[in-house]
Length: 221
Image (cartoon, rainbow, N blue to C red; front, side, top):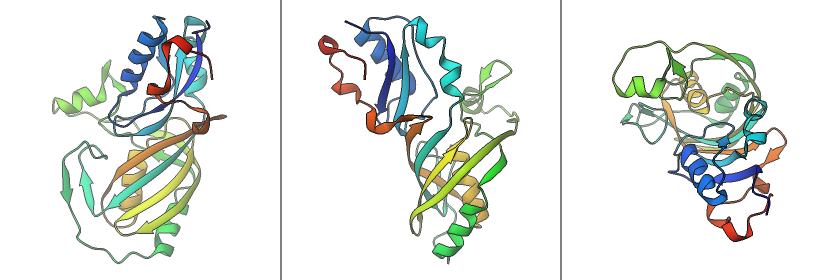
């Protein structure tokens, strides 16, 4: 029975990407297991899991692929982490924002832009994960990075919720993008939902949920 290979997993909410890797390690019995691109615990969607040394050594190849996300941004509120896991505060009870204004702001982000990754992220700063430094209350500066937003389309808007679909380069933080969009609209905001739908040519429609994988009938997708 073939166990090593590339698995497309639909990560559930509240699971960390490492939780998925650990589960796949137990299911397959293969020690060398990794993933190609972290999804925050609150986020769902496509996670590429690589099983076996032949595949884990290709991790960087998959990490560099473009991504596509479906996200929901809540305006008028601020989160310390940019998502539902942080401390939430209300900054505006109502804003007079029309759909045309929201669409215009989304368009302004298309192209090559600079982004400052969130402090609560897995990026290493002087050998330590940024989120660990942030939890300790340490002061540090996150380095800017150049990213590309290929498209940013409004799915629906009814204040305070903005739902959008974004196609972007690797290294893009959608939490930060959401905060920046809110800032351009004259307020604060955080992501309430985030779902990764594509990584390069790999699509969520071809993924499998963890609880659907049966150890006795394990096959490659």
